[in-house]
Length: 61
Image (cartoon, rainbow, N blue to C red):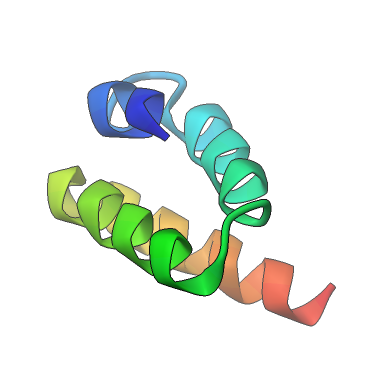
């Protein structure tokens, strides 16, 4: 989760965000939302759109 905050906007941002989503799935709902908000607030717009796409895709899988 903390790697997503630190490296989510970097060249491997998608990979880091995918890992954070997997880790988020192991948390209770309250903590999952809190971490998601922390990650979201640290991302620039292109990575926010990428994260949205990952979440939508995961919801349909």
